[in-house]
Image (tube, rainbow, N blue to C red; front, side, top):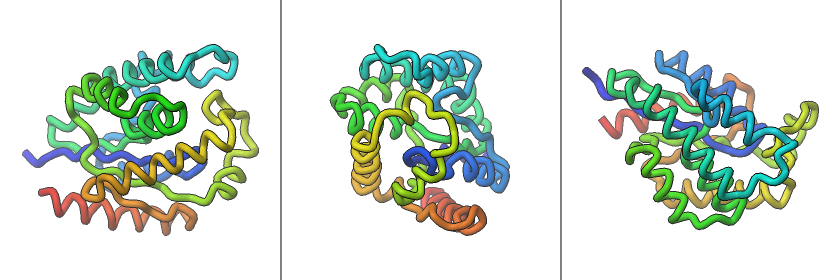
Length: 204
């Protein structure tokens, strides 16, 4: 039985992750999942965290709910799939918590790493693709839709998140690939496929 790879696509809002997760999963015959909300329990947690009416939700509560969602997804879907030898492609992962609740909300990064490592049972993504898109373009992409609680966090927040993602990618170059997400869906898909195939080949 071959090894199943845990592949995550990361980036800020409006970078095209969801479209590319679906395409990559189809190309690899992988299971596609998302965080938060990848299980029935996770959908409930996602609703709580994304609801703009929940204005009193603290950063720590948000981080703990994210970790709970992540634990459920790992045990219900991700780990069984990887153990069967099949790949998993995830729309966001633990690194989003480090970027959003850590760099964005200001929570302690090492504490976040510890909590999430516990939630994941130590199983972090093998390959991470960072979708890098100019902030003006991402604002154009999300400007037409009703914004959820995260998307209403403000420009300064998302600047910190973007800087966080770049710092995380720079710290683990053997795990991360940074992709220019500003091209057409076909162009971006080709870049992602090349990066993923290269990483899979290097880790086998």
